Length: 89
Image (cartoon, rainbow, N blue to C red; front, top):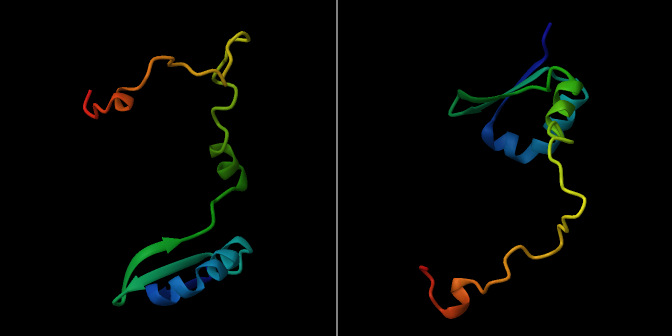
């Protein structure tokens, strides 16, 4: 049976980190946050850790920088328009 915790937004705000820790530890399966007695948010842990890990760095290796390209060298050597006091170009 699912362990569902319901609390109002004020209590959620005061105990947010504790609630997130309880979700991560699977002490509760779902947290329902209410305002004026009506649900406004439902929190639950991700279905799989691998799904979350897949989001971070999913484009790793998709960009290639030419070996002779210096990422620390400025691209624009001309003065910016703002330096001349013209803010609208």
